[in-house]
Image 1 (cartoon, rainbow, N blue to C red):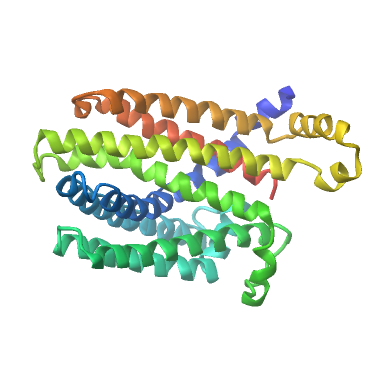
Image 2: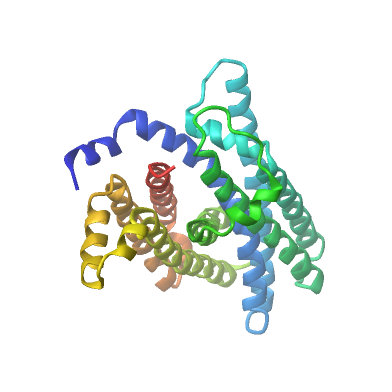
Length: 331
């Protein structure tokens, strides 16, 4: 770990683009995760606390639809400022918009449409039914496909210095053979679940006065969302470490070395990586985010801990920012 790596992490020319990209990714990941959280909640608690589970699934699906609107507004506004020569975008954001208007973005819009349909279905039929699970499953599949297309598209577009060509559907089978893409995809999926669960806590606070389902429900819903954010947050961090290692390690050289030398070579490669500082910062922030959820899970009246909810969301946003820095250094 070198001092120049630490200085580069907080340099404005690195920090500001990462904050901008994280600001665009955060609502999209929350919207994606909201669909999964709604479906999983309704399914997991169907026998024990079905009434509470259905109410939470309805509220989380509505939360996802609200965030979707904010996400599309942010993307459109930022794109308009760029096209109008008012606020130029960084190279990283240009790659994002290149994919957004290509096949990944088209599939993403399909996922957005299915999310809206799922939210409307929960609003019309508040009790869980087969239609909710069918529509929810289709929406989850659409989001998973969109996420994978963005991941492999980002890996492919990073190879071009100038204007990258349009994504070739026939090349997708070859792109999907890279294990790193699946590692990043898995982390993104669980990260979306963690973000939706954590940000959903604030939505429950806002909705409590408008939809008064009782103290017992909101205490249960808060603990459930916090538990979802904690469990998914731990899993996504593990996938993130695996993806980081896969990108850092010189696999071809390690295969040619004796088994006794492979561990030392791996440790050397990890310690000398320019992204190590960002990854360590991500893990530290993730740990702080997990610790902020523990009191919410254990409390009998977690709705009083609004400061912890807000602090958790802020910490997670910062962790997403350094995560963007981590992976951007490889592409």
